Image 1: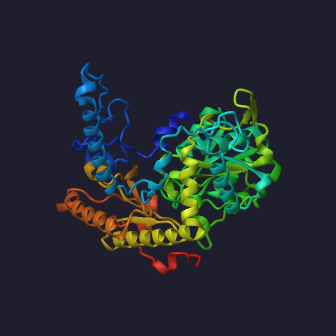
Image 2: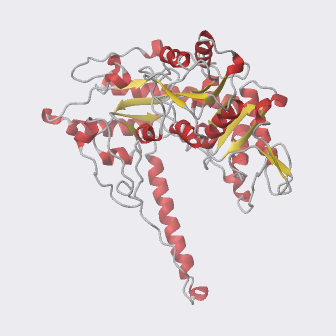
Image 3: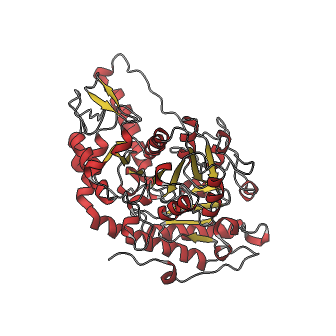
Length: 485
Protein backbone atom coordinates (compact mmCIF):
# COMPACT_ATOMS: atom_id res chain seq x y z
CA UNK A 1 0.00 0.00 0.00
CA UNK A 2 1.24 3.49 -0.81
CA UNK A 3 1.11 6.26 1.74
CA UNK A 4 -1.33 8.37 -0.25
CA UNK A 5 -4.09 5.81 -0.09
CA UNK A 6 -6.74 6.63 2.47
CA UNK A 7 -8.33 3.68 4.20
CA UNK A 8 -11.87 3.38 5.45
CA UNK A 9 -11.81 2.99 9.20
CA UNK A 10 -14.13 3.26 12.15
CA UNK A 11 -13.01 6.83 12.69
CA UNK A 12 -14.50 7.79 9.32
CA UNK A 13 -17.99 6.54 9.99
CA UNK A 14 -19.45 9.47 11.92
CA UNK A 15 -18.18 11.93 9.33
CA UNK A 16 -19.79 9.86 6.58
CA UNK A 17 -23.22 9.65 8.16
CA UNK A 18 -25.77 12.33 7.29
CA UNK A 19 -26.50 14.30 10.42
CA UNK A 20 -29.68 12.98 11.93
CA UNK A 21 -31.90 14.06 14.79
CA UNK A 22 -34.62 12.21 16.60
CA UNK A 23 -37.97 13.97 16.42
CA UNK A 24 -39.61 14.85 19.71
CA UNK A 25 -43.16 13.56 19.61
CA UNK A 26 -45.57 16.29 20.57
CA UNK A 27 -42.87 18.66 21.87
CA UNK A 28 -41.36 21.90 20.63
CA UNK A 29 -38.06 21.52 18.82
CA UNK A 30 -35.12 23.09 20.61
CA UNK A 31 -32.47 25.12 18.74
CA UNK A 32 -29.40 23.23 19.91
CA UNK A 33 -27.02 24.34 17.15
CA UNK A 34 -25.72 27.85 16.60
CA UNK A 35 -25.58 29.32 13.09
CA UNK A 36 -21.77 29.47 12.97
CA UNK A 37 -21.61 25.71 13.65
CA UNK A 38 -23.33 25.17 10.31
CA UNK A 39 -20.98 27.55 8.58
CA UNK A 40 -18.00 25.63 9.93
CA UNK A 41 -19.05 22.47 8.16
CA UNK A 42 -21.29 20.51 10.50
CA UNK A 43 -21.97 19.77 14.12
CA UNK A 44 -20.57 17.38 16.64
CA UNK A 45 -22.53 14.23 17.35
CA UNK A 46 -22.15 13.19 20.97
CA UNK A 47 -24.06 10.14 22.09
CA UNK A 48 -26.17 10.97 25.11
CA UNK A 49 -26.22 14.68 24.35
CA UNK A 50 -27.87 14.76 20.94
CA UNK A 51 -30.67 12.38 21.91
CA UNK A 52 -34.04 14.02 22.40
CA UNK A 53 -36.43 11.08 22.10
CA UNK A 54 -39.06 10.89 24.78
CA UNK A 55 -40.10 7.68 26.55
CA UNK A 56 -43.61 6.30 26.46
CA UNK A 57 -43.86 4.30 29.66
CA UNK A 58 -44.94 0.68 29.87
CA UNK A 59 -47.15 0.38 32.95
CA UNK A 60 -48.58 -2.61 34.76
CA UNK A 61 -52.37 -3.11 34.72
CA UNK A 62 -54.21 -2.24 37.92
CA UNK A 63 -55.76 -5.06 39.91
CA UNK A 64 -59.26 -3.96 38.96
CA UNK A 65 -58.41 -3.12 35.32
CA UNK A 66 -60.34 -6.17 34.13
CA UNK A 67 -63.49 -4.36 35.16
CA UNK A 68 -62.63 -0.69 34.63
CA UNK A 69 -60.85 -0.90 31.27
CA UNK A 70 -58.37 1.80 32.33
CA UNK A 71 -55.46 0.06 30.60
CA UNK A 72 -57.34 -0.19 27.30
CA UNK A 73 -58.23 3.49 27.53
CA UNK A 74 -54.60 4.39 28.31
CA UNK A 75 -53.30 2.49 25.30
CA UNK A 76 -56.03 3.76 22.98
CA UNK A 77 -55.28 7.36 23.97
CA UNK A 78 -51.54 6.98 23.31
CA UNK A 79 -52.07 5.24 19.99
CA UNK A 80 -54.52 7.93 18.87
CA UNK A 81 -51.99 10.62 19.80
CA UNK A 82 -49.23 8.77 17.99
CA UNK A 83 -51.36 8.45 14.87
CA UNK A 84 -51.99 12.19 14.94
CA UNK A 85 -48.23 12.78 15.19
CA UNK A 86 -47.57 10.47 12.25
CA UNK A 87 -50.13 12.29 10.10
CA UNK A 88 -48.53 15.63 10.98
CA UNK A 89 -44.94 14.52 10.42
CA UNK A 90 -45.79 12.78 7.15
CA UNK A 91 -46.96 16.12 5.75
CA UNK A 92 -43.41 17.48 6.05
CA UNK A 93 -41.42 14.41 5.00
CA UNK A 94 -39.22 15.50 2.09
CA UNK A 95 -35.60 14.91 3.14
CA UNK A 96 -35.36 11.13 3.10
CA UNK A 97 -36.07 8.67 0.26
CA UNK A 98 -39.20 6.90 1.50
CA UNK A 99 -42.25 6.65 -0.73
CA UNK A 100 -45.22 7.39 1.53
CA UNK A 101 -47.79 7.21 -1.27
CA UNK A 102 -49.36 3.79 -0.69
CA UNK A 103 -52.47 2.00 0.48
CA UNK A 104 -52.21 -1.57 1.75
CA UNK A 105 -55.66 -1.88 3.28
CA UNK A 106 -56.23 -5.09 1.33
CA UNK A 107 -53.43 -6.78 3.29
CA UNK A 108 -54.85 -6.03 6.76
CA UNK A 109 -56.43 -9.51 6.76
CA UNK A 110 -52.94 -11.04 7.07
CA UNK A 111 -51.88 -9.09 10.15
CA UNK A 112 -52.98 -11.84 12.52
CA UNK A 113 -50.36 -14.26 11.19
CA UNK A 114 -46.73 -14.62 12.29
CA UNK A 115 -45.12 -15.01 8.86
CA UNK A 116 -41.43 -15.95 8.95
CA UNK A 117 -39.36 -16.70 5.83
CA UNK A 118 -36.54 -18.43 7.68
CA UNK A 119 -33.89 -20.21 5.63
CA UNK A 120 -33.38 -20.34 1.87
CA UNK A 121 -36.21 -18.71 -0.14
CA UNK A 122 -36.02 -21.48 -2.73
CA UNK A 123 -36.16 -24.43 -0.32
CA UNK A 124 -39.12 -25.25 1.89
CA UNK A 125 -38.45 -25.61 5.61
CA UNK A 126 -40.39 -27.23 8.42
CA UNK A 127 -41.79 -23.79 9.34
CA UNK A 128 -45.06 -23.70 7.44
CA UNK A 129 -46.27 -20.13 8.09
CA UNK A 130 -44.18 -18.44 5.41
CA UNK A 131 -44.53 -16.36 2.22
CA UNK A 132 -41.77 -17.87 0.09
CA UNK A 133 -44.03 -18.06 -2.95
CA UNK A 134 -44.41 -14.27 -2.80
CA UNK A 135 -40.70 -13.77 -2.07
CA UNK A 136 -39.55 -15.80 -5.06
CA UNK A 137 -42.12 -14.06 -7.26
CA UNK A 138 -40.63 -10.68 -6.29
CA UNK A 139 -37.09 -11.96 -6.86
CA UNK A 140 -38.03 -13.27 -10.32
CA UNK A 141 -39.42 -9.82 -11.20
CA UNK A 142 -36.14 -8.14 -10.27
CA UNK A 143 -34.11 -10.84 -12.03
CA UNK A 144 -35.94 -9.96 -15.25
CA UNK A 145 -35.35 -6.26 -14.63
CA UNK A 146 -31.60 -6.80 -14.17
CA UNK A 147 -31.33 -9.36 -16.97
CA UNK A 148 -30.27 -12.58 -15.32
CA UNK A 149 -31.83 -15.95 -16.06
CA UNK A 150 -33.95 -17.62 -13.42
CA UNK A 151 -31.60 -20.60 -13.11
CA UNK A 152 -28.53 -18.36 -12.78
CA UNK A 153 -29.44 -16.13 -9.84
CA UNK A 154 -29.95 -16.43 -6.09
CA UNK A 155 -31.37 -13.82 -3.78
CA UNK A 156 -33.61 -13.01 -0.87
CA UNK A 157 -35.65 -10.21 0.64
CA UNK A 158 -33.64 -8.66 3.44
CA UNK A 159 -34.72 -6.75 6.53
CA UNK A 160 -33.36 -3.50 5.08
CA UNK A 161 -31.07 -1.87 2.54
CA UNK A 162 -28.07 -2.10 4.86
CA UNK A 163 -28.48 -5.87 5.18
CA UNK A 164 -28.66 -6.10 1.39
CA UNK A 165 -25.35 -4.24 1.13
CA UNK A 166 -23.81 -6.34 3.90
CA UNK A 167 -24.74 -9.47 1.97
CA UNK A 168 -23.44 -8.17 -1.35
CA UNK A 169 -20.08 -7.24 0.15
CA UNK A 170 -19.97 -10.55 2.04
CA UNK A 171 -20.41 -12.50 -1.20
CA UNK A 172 -17.55 -10.51 -2.71
CA UNK A 173 -15.38 -11.24 0.31
CA UNK A 174 -16.18 -14.98 0.08
CA UNK A 175 -15.34 -15.01 -3.64
CA UNK A 176 -12.07 -13.14 -2.97
CA UNK A 177 -11.03 -13.69 0.69
CA UNK A 178 -7.90 -11.55 0.20
CA UNK A 179 -9.63 -8.92 -1.92
CA UNK A 180 -9.53 -5.18 -1.20
CA UNK A 181 -12.82 -3.29 -0.95
CA UNK A 182 -12.95 -0.06 -2.97
CA UNK A 183 -15.75 2.43 -2.26
CA UNK A 184 -16.15 6.07 -3.17
CA UNK A 185 -16.29 8.73 -0.47
CA UNK A 186 -19.97 9.28 -1.23
CA UNK A 187 -20.92 5.64 -0.65
CA UNK A 188 -23.57 4.83 1.95
CA UNK A 189 -22.18 4.33 5.44
CA UNK A 190 -23.29 0.69 5.42
CA UNK A 191 -20.49 -0.10 2.96
CA UNK A 192 -17.88 1.06 5.46
CA UNK A 193 -19.79 -0.76 8.20
CA UNK A 194 -19.38 -3.94 6.14
CA UNK A 195 -15.63 -3.33 5.91
CA UNK A 196 -15.42 -3.06 9.70
CA UNK A 197 -17.62 -6.06 10.36
CA UNK A 198 -15.73 -8.32 7.96
CA UNK A 199 -12.32 -6.84 8.83
CA UNK A 200 -11.69 -6.11 5.17
CA UNK A 201 -8.94 -3.89 3.84
CA UNK A 202 -10.83 -0.93 2.42
CA UNK A 203 -9.73 1.99 0.24
CA UNK A 204 -11.72 5.19 -0.20
CA UNK A 205 -11.86 6.59 -3.73
CA UNK A 206 -12.27 10.30 -4.45
CA UNK A 207 -15.44 11.63 -6.08
CA UNK A 208 -16.23 14.32 -8.60
CA UNK A 209 -18.25 17.38 -7.64
CA UNK A 210 -21.35 15.53 -8.80
CA UNK A 211 -20.69 12.76 -6.29
CA UNK A 212 -19.75 10.19 -8.94
CA UNK A 213 -16.67 8.05 -8.45
CA UNK A 214 -13.46 9.66 -9.76
CA UNK A 215 -12.16 6.94 -12.07
CA UNK A 216 -8.77 8.64 -12.43
CA UNK A 217 -8.22 8.30 -8.67
CA UNK A 218 -9.75 4.81 -8.82
CA UNK A 219 -7.13 3.70 -11.34
CA UNK A 220 -4.29 5.08 -9.22
CA UNK A 221 -5.46 3.13 -6.20
CA UNK A 222 -6.06 -0.04 -8.21
CA UNK A 223 -2.52 0.11 -9.60
CA UNK A 224 -1.14 0.46 -6.07
CA UNK A 225 -2.72 -2.90 -5.20
CA UNK A 226 -2.46 -4.90 -8.43
CA UNK A 227 -1.43 -8.02 -6.55
CA UNK A 228 -4.82 -8.37 -4.81
CA UNK A 229 -8.32 -8.88 -6.26
CA UNK A 230 -10.72 -5.95 -6.20
CA UNK A 231 -14.17 -5.84 -4.58
CA UNK A 232 -15.95 -2.68 -5.70
CA UNK A 233 -19.06 -0.94 -4.46
CA UNK A 234 -20.78 0.90 -7.32
CA UNK A 235 -23.35 3.51 -6.29
CA UNK A 236 -26.53 3.56 -8.32
CA UNK A 237 -27.47 6.81 -6.64
CA UNK A 238 -25.38 8.22 -3.80
CA UNK A 239 -26.95 9.02 -0.45
CA UNK A 240 -26.49 12.79 -0.42
CA UNK A 241 -26.23 13.94 -4.04
CA UNK A 242 -28.03 11.18 -5.91
CA UNK A 243 -25.03 10.62 -8.19
CA UNK A 244 -24.84 7.46 -10.29
CA UNK A 245 -21.62 5.55 -10.91
CA UNK A 246 -21.71 4.07 -14.40
CA UNK A 247 -20.90 0.35 -14.10
CA UNK A 248 -19.43 0.34 -17.61
CA UNK A 249 -16.99 3.13 -16.73
CA UNK A 250 -15.94 1.29 -13.57
CA UNK A 251 -15.45 -1.96 -15.50
CA UNK A 252 -13.40 -0.14 -18.11
CA UNK A 253 -11.16 1.33 -15.39
CA UNK A 254 -10.61 -2.16 -14.00
CA UNK A 255 -9.76 -3.59 -17.41
CA UNK A 256 -7.38 -0.73 -18.24
CA UNK A 257 -5.45 -1.35 -15.03
CA UNK A 258 -5.03 -5.05 -15.79
CA UNK A 259 -7.85 -6.56 -13.74
CA UNK A 260 -9.43 -9.40 -15.68
CA UNK A 261 -13.02 -10.43 -15.00
CA UNK A 262 -11.90 -13.28 -12.76
CA UNK A 263 -10.09 -10.84 -10.43
CA UNK A 264 -12.85 -8.43 -9.46
CA UNK A 265 -16.32 -8.48 -7.93
CA UNK A 266 -18.78 -5.59 -8.29
CA UNK A 267 -21.68 -4.94 -5.93
CA UNK A 268 -24.20 -2.35 -7.14
CA UNK A 269 -25.90 -0.44 -4.33
CA UNK A 270 -29.13 0.70 -5.97
CA UNK A 271 -31.02 1.51 -2.76
CA UNK A 272 -33.27 4.16 -4.36
CA UNK A 273 -32.15 4.64 -7.96
CA UNK A 274 -31.86 0.95 -8.79
CA UNK A 275 -35.58 0.95 -9.55
CA UNK A 276 -35.54 4.34 -11.28
CA UNK A 277 -32.66 4.06 -13.77
CA UNK A 278 -34.31 1.38 -15.95
CA UNK A 279 -36.97 3.92 -16.90
CA UNK A 280 -34.69 6.83 -17.87
CA UNK A 281 -33.13 7.09 -21.32
CA UNK A 282 -29.31 7.27 -21.56
CA UNK A 283 -28.98 6.51 -17.86
CA UNK A 284 -26.30 4.03 -16.76
CA UNK A 285 -27.69 0.53 -17.00
CA UNK A 286 -27.47 -2.18 -14.38
CA UNK A 287 -27.43 -5.62 -15.94
CA UNK A 288 -26.02 -9.04 -15.10
CA UNK A 289 -25.04 -9.29 -18.76
CA UNK A 290 -22.09 -7.22 -17.56
CA UNK A 291 -19.47 -8.70 -15.21
CA UNK A 292 -21.17 -7.61 -11.98
CA UNK A 293 -21.64 -9.82 -8.93
CA UNK A 294 -24.70 -8.50 -7.09
CA UNK A 295 -27.35 -5.78 -7.04
CA UNK A 296 -29.50 -4.54 -4.18
CA UNK A 297 -32.36 -2.08 -3.71
CA UNK A 298 -34.44 -0.97 -0.75
CA UNK A 299 -38.07 -2.03 -0.72
CA UNK A 300 -39.25 0.82 1.50
CA UNK A 301 -37.88 3.53 -0.78
CA UNK A 302 -39.15 3.73 -4.34
CA UNK A 303 -41.60 0.83 -4.04
CA UNK A 304 -43.13 2.20 -0.84
CA UNK A 305 -43.23 -0.76 1.53
CA UNK A 306 -44.36 0.38 5.01
CA UNK A 307 -41.62 -1.61 6.76
CA UNK A 308 -37.87 -1.45 6.03
CA UNK A 309 -36.78 -4.22 3.66
CA UNK A 310 -34.44 -4.79 0.74
CA UNK A 311 -33.95 -6.98 -2.31
CA UNK A 312 -30.55 -8.61 -2.86
CA UNK A 313 -29.70 -10.64 -5.97
CA UNK A 314 -26.41 -12.31 -6.80
CA UNK A 315 -25.18 -15.04 -9.12
CA UNK A 316 -26.06 -18.57 -8.05
CA UNK A 317 -22.49 -19.71 -8.72
CA UNK A 318 -21.26 -17.46 -5.86
CA UNK A 319 -23.68 -18.56 -3.19
CA UNK A 320 -22.43 -22.07 -2.46
CA UNK A 321 -19.52 -20.64 -0.47
CA UNK A 322 -22.03 -19.06 1.93
CA UNK A 323 -24.62 -21.81 2.13
CA UNK A 324 -24.92 -24.06 5.17
CA UNK A 325 -27.42 -26.87 5.68
CA UNK A 326 -29.54 -26.37 8.79
CA UNK A 327 -31.16 -29.57 10.02
CA UNK A 328 -33.23 -27.61 12.53
CA UNK A 329 -35.01 -25.96 9.58
CA UNK A 330 -34.81 -28.85 7.10
CA UNK A 331 -33.43 -26.20 4.74
CA UNK A 332 -30.19 -24.40 3.96
CA UNK A 333 -29.28 -20.83 4.72
CA UNK A 334 -27.03 -18.26 3.10
CA UNK A 335 -28.65 -15.11 4.47
CA UNK A 336 -27.33 -12.58 6.97
CA UNK A 337 -30.35 -12.84 9.25
CA UNK A 338 -31.95 -16.22 9.80
CA UNK A 339 -35.53 -15.14 10.46
CA UNK A 340 -36.88 -12.63 7.97
CA UNK A 341 -40.06 -10.58 7.84
CA UNK A 342 -42.53 -12.70 5.92
CA UNK A 343 -44.98 -9.84 5.52
CA UNK A 344 -42.57 -7.66 3.51
CA UNK A 345 -42.53 -9.91 0.39
CA UNK A 346 -46.33 -9.79 0.29
CA UNK A 347 -46.34 -5.98 0.38
CA UNK A 348 -43.69 -5.86 -2.36
CA UNK A 349 -45.54 -8.44 -4.48
CA UNK A 350 -48.77 -6.45 -4.09
CA UNK A 351 -47.20 -3.20 -5.33
CA UNK A 352 -45.29 -4.79 -8.22
CA UNK A 353 -48.52 -6.37 -9.44
CA UNK A 354 -50.47 -3.16 -8.96
CA UNK A 355 -48.02 -0.80 -10.71
CA UNK A 356 -45.81 -2.89 -12.95
CA UNK A 357 -43.15 -1.42 -15.23
CA UNK A 358 -45.54 1.14 -16.74
CA UNK A 359 -46.62 2.45 -13.36
CA UNK A 360 -43.05 2.86 -12.12
CA UNK A 361 -42.02 4.60 -15.35
CA UNK A 362 -44.82 7.13 -14.98
CA UNK A 363 -43.83 7.87 -11.37
CA UNK A 364 -40.17 8.29 -12.35
CA UNK A 365 -41.10 10.81 -15.03
CA UNK A 366 -43.24 12.86 -12.64
CA UNK A 367 -40.62 12.90 -9.88
CA UNK A 368 -37.73 13.91 -12.14
CA UNK A 369 -39.79 16.77 -13.56
CA UNK A 370 -40.84 17.90 -10.09
CA UNK A 371 -37.20 17.80 -8.96
CA UNK A 372 -36.23 20.12 -11.82
CA UNK A 373 -39.13 22.36 -10.86
CA UNK A 374 -37.75 22.77 -7.33
CA UNK A 375 -34.18 23.28 -8.50
CA UNK A 376 -35.28 25.98 -10.96
CA UNK A 377 -37.29 27.80 -8.26
CA UNK A 378 -34.28 27.76 -5.94
CA UNK A 379 -32.00 29.13 -8.64
CA UNK A 380 -34.52 31.81 -9.58
CA UNK A 381 -34.50 32.93 -5.93
CA UNK A 382 -30.71 33.10 -5.88
CA UNK A 383 -30.32 29.99 -3.70
CA UNK A 384 -27.40 27.69 -4.43
CA UNK A 385 -28.68 24.32 -5.61
CA UNK A 386 -27.67 21.34 -7.73
CA UNK A 387 -29.55 18.50 -9.40
CA UNK A 388 -27.65 15.65 -11.00
CA UNK A 389 -28.84 14.30 -14.31
CA UNK A 390 -31.16 11.29 -13.85
CA UNK A 391 -31.68 12.30 -10.21
CA UNK A 392 -34.62 13.30 -8.02
CA UNK A 393 -32.33 14.56 -5.22
CA UNK A 394 -32.10 18.36 -5.08
CA UNK A 395 -29.02 19.53 -3.15
CA UNK A 396 -28.96 23.07 -1.76
CA UNK A 397 -27.36 25.26 0.90
CA UNK A 398 -27.96 24.04 4.43
CA UNK A 399 -30.64 25.99 6.31
CA UNK A 400 -29.46 27.76 9.46
CA UNK A 401 -32.59 27.12 11.50
CA UNK A 402 -32.61 23.78 13.34
CA UNK A 403 -36.37 23.96 13.80
CA UNK A 404 -36.82 24.36 10.05
CA UNK A 405 -34.50 21.42 9.36
CA UNK A 406 -36.39 19.19 11.75
CA UNK A 407 -39.82 20.30 10.62
CA UNK A 408 -39.08 19.34 7.01
CA UNK A 409 -36.91 16.38 8.09
CA UNK A 410 -34.01 17.44 5.90
CA UNK A 411 -30.91 15.28 5.57
CA UNK A 412 -27.83 17.49 6.07
CA UNK A 413 -24.11 17.06 5.65
CA UNK A 414 -21.63 19.88 6.14
CA UNK A 415 -22.91 23.00 4.36
CA UNK A 416 -25.47 21.20 2.21
CA UNK A 417 -28.89 19.62 2.61
CA UNK A 418 -31.18 17.85 0.19
CA UNK A 419 -34.78 17.20 -0.74
CA UNK A 420 -35.63 13.82 -2.28
CA UNK A 421 -38.62 14.24 -4.58
CA UNK A 422 -40.61 11.02 -4.12
CA UNK A 423 -44.09 10.17 -5.49
CA UNK A 424 -45.72 11.57 -2.34
CA UNK A 425 -43.83 14.89 -2.66
CA UNK A 426 -46.20 16.92 -4.80
CA UNK A 427 -45.73 20.30 -6.48
CA UNK A 428 -47.95 21.79 -3.77
CA UNK A 429 -45.71 20.40 -1.03
CA UNK A 430 -42.59 21.68 -2.81
CA UNK A 431 -44.19 25.13 -3.09
CA UNK A 432 -44.96 25.15 0.64
CA UNK A 433 -41.38 24.18 1.43
CA UNK A 434 -39.92 26.74 -0.96
CA UNK A 435 -42.12 29.60 0.24
CA UNK A 436 -41.22 28.94 3.89
CA UNK A 437 -37.52 28.59 3.04
CA UNK A 438 -37.46 31.95 1.27
CA UNK A 439 -39.16 33.71 4.19
CA UNK A 440 -36.87 32.08 6.77
CA UNK A 441 -33.77 32.70 4.68
CA UNK A 442 -34.47 36.41 4.44
CA UNK A 443 -34.27 36.62 8.25
CA UNK A 444 -31.07 34.56 8.43
CA UNK A 445 -29.14 36.87 6.15
CA UNK A 446 -30.88 40.22 6.57
CA UNK A 447 -28.81 43.34 7.20
CA UNK A 448 -25.60 41.66 6.07
CA UNK A 449 -25.13 39.98 9.47
CA UNK A 450 -24.14 36.84 7.64
CA UNK A 451 -23.76 35.67 4.05
CA UNK A 452 -24.97 32.45 2.49
CA UNK A 453 -22.18 29.85 2.54
CA UNK A 454 -20.07 29.18 -0.52
CA UNK A 455 -20.83 25.61 -1.52
CA UNK A 456 -19.09 25.63 -4.88
CA UNK A 457 -16.83 22.84 -3.65
CA UNK A 458 -19.87 20.67 -2.96
CA UNK A 459 -22.08 21.50 -5.97
CA UNK A 460 -19.88 23.32 -8.51
CA UNK A 461 -19.36 27.04 -9.07
CA UNK A 462 -22.04 27.13 -11.79
CA UNK A 463 -24.63 26.18 -9.17
CA UNK A 464 -23.34 28.38 -6.34
CA UNK A 465 -24.91 31.79 -5.75
CA UNK A 466 -22.69 33.01 -2.92
CA UNK A 467 -21.09 36.45 -3.05
CA UNK A 468 -18.03 35.01 -4.83
CA UNK A 469 -19.93 33.19 -7.56
CA UNK A 470 -22.60 34.39 -9.93
CA UNK A 471 -24.01 30.95 -10.39
CA UNK A 472 -25.18 29.57 -13.67
CA UNK A 473 -28.44 28.06 -14.69
CA UNK A 474 -28.61 25.65 -17.60
CA UNK A 475 -31.95 25.20 -19.24
CA UNK A 476 -34.08 22.29 -18.23
CA UNK A 477 -34.12 20.90 -21.75
CA UNK A 478 -30.31 20.84 -21.93
CA UNK A 479 -29.91 19.07 -18.58
CA UNK A 480 -32.84 16.69 -18.39
CA UNK A 481 -32.24 13.49 -20.32
CA UNK A 482 -35.18 12.42 -22.42
CA UNK A 483 -37.37 9.95 -20.54
CA UNK A 484 -38.42 6.73 -22.18
CA UNK A 485 -41.83 6.92 -23.73
